[in-house]
Figure 1 (tube, helix red, strand yellow):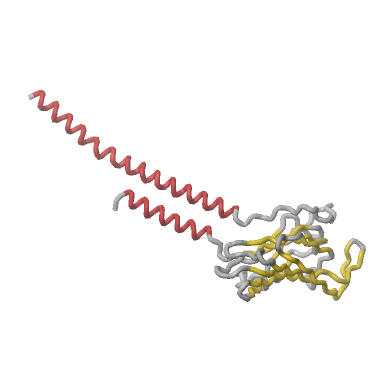
Figure 2 (cartoon, one colour):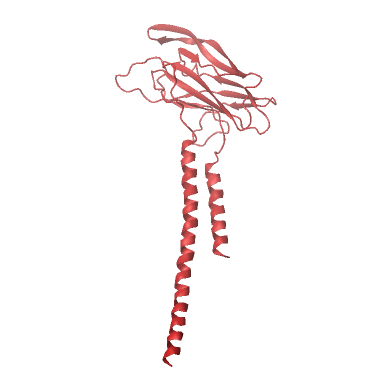
Amino acid sequence: MTWFKRATVVAATVGAVTLAVAAPASAHVTVSSTSAVQGGYGVLVFRVPTESDTASTTKVEVNLPIKQAPVASVSLRPVPGWTAVAEKAKLDKPLDAHGTQITEVISKITWTAGADAAIKPGQFQQFEVSMGPLPKVDQMFFKALQTYSDGTVVRWIDEPTTDGTEPENPAPTLKLAAAATGDTAAPASAAPAAPESSNSGAAFGIAGLVLGVIALVFALLAYRRAGAGPATAPAAADTKERVTSGKSS
């Protein structure tokens, strides 16, 4: 096998590994926030990708955990082409929010796509919700239902398992950090914090692996040249010796 074929095989192998590492295990409905802490206000971002190759996402339902972690104030950011409906439910026990007793809170949010706003295959949409004061718990589970244009409904409702393995259809989970000492709860600003990027780490990983492939090809070229040098030098020296010998005779 020539050095060029070897370099091609190595590059193809590394490229395949790159794609395998970069591809996500699955595209779940997730929730994230850069401003949510216990007792404070924050903007939550629900990210909804379409996993189907043939159908689009037309409806998203998110259930708030009002029994385990109720939230007094919930407001929605409009999404072009989508209508949002917030449903309320009565609490078994009143919730105290800044001295006010709250007996009814939003328990479910449903986003429905207009004619041209459905999330097509290979695309995703983000839905932003401002909430607070957030409960003083370590994490919140938001069970969600994703409806496709072909009638399929995917239920993202499974809570984390006790053995640490990821369930088949995990519910969007938000981890809440404890507020710093002295912090006071304040409503989130109108402009939400930018959601955490799920692709930045993968992008850096892909770039690093691509550079590695390029470096490997150059290394093989350098190795080939280095190997060719010593092999030709003795031949040149031998030729010179023959010419010298001819003249002396």
